[in-house]
Length: 160
Image (cartoon, rainbow, N blue to C red; front, side):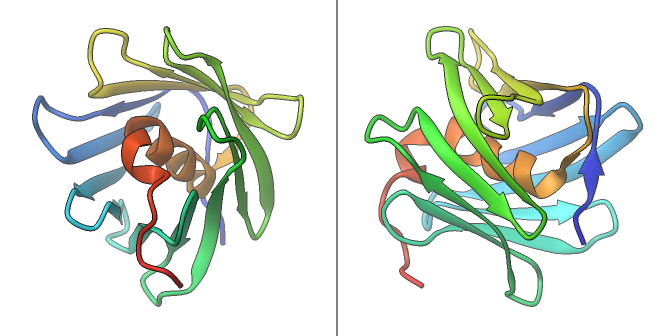
């Protein structure tokens, strides 16, 4: 079952930390702990359930729930990493770069963005997400991963 989020969302990580916190207008949404060793991210939701984002080959990420079932996937669409397909049980979105210089990305159905992701210009430890319509938290996290971990997201990881 997808968890939907809406409104301004902040993602922050303290300097030199591997832990990110996602907050929406109503409070915390999730904490994410990045692992440099295996290029994965462990997600702890507010209800204490856990998800995991892992590389699954070149240009492919898989989001699994605590039972190991795949609940979402991100697939790189371009060699430059400027376009990704983000999909899950109840959604399918395009993640495309609007400006690499300003670190701004769009997420939504093809040609119709419903969310904008703004990376920090002076800091790679912040991201602001603006969405007028509810979007699945799974989609948001799968979009966040290749943006903040671009050099890792495209690399080949454990094959599935």
